[in-house]
Length: 341
Image (cartoon, rainbow, N blue to C red; front, top):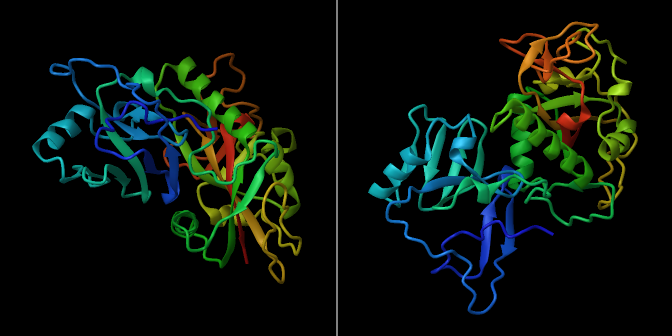
């Protein structure tokens, strides 16, 4: 199903099977398909052509370093260092990123996440973002509305999510299981919304956050299948707007998670683990927060009462937001369900 995203790499000394490290440390594989005798690269004189550096984005396609406003360095900066020593390690001035040229890996030291990188003469038009399934999805079945995939407690993906929940989310509870939600329909809607907002606002990247949402376990199947429903918002108040609420900290979302002895749904996935006693669940979602504005209880969209759409979400405090309100479910992709006691 996935397209070959490495078609423009120099593979002269490389065997046909490639691996890349996707988000949350999940290792994925794809086959480099090439007809016998067919040259997949365009011959060109690169003597005076600048090199661009790319990272493998969540969508499975390559994006230029310049496309991510969070990166404090350019392709030119990286290439200058690389040409001096192609086997060295580059630490940025703020020490928030590290580039290992021998492994071709970009590490976000703050978020503890790695992305595969590459050096290429090709233009950014070859690396546009499409709504393919994320490269780390496994056993993907497009005929199922969604799949709830239990993660192994020993996998890097599980450990990274667990660390985020406890360290960034401040949740001091016993995590029993973590499930990845695989819903291609919701993912495609999310990707299309992202491209739409970036095109309308004339930007190359939009702020995305991983935020928490607490709810009853009986709502898991509906959310995994249809996403969060703004029509059902306001059941626990709407102090910052009549939308879907997310929290920076899992401890806040935990207040709205009800204890239950019901098992999680099994739709499209393997049989789920059954834990004795009552448990709680929270969602860890990818949320397109964009440019926020301080919310008020009567708001039905970020720019309430205005025909303009200058903002993308409402928050409790613009300078130090902890609560986010989203009014369009396409700005949300529910990524994980965390079950705990």
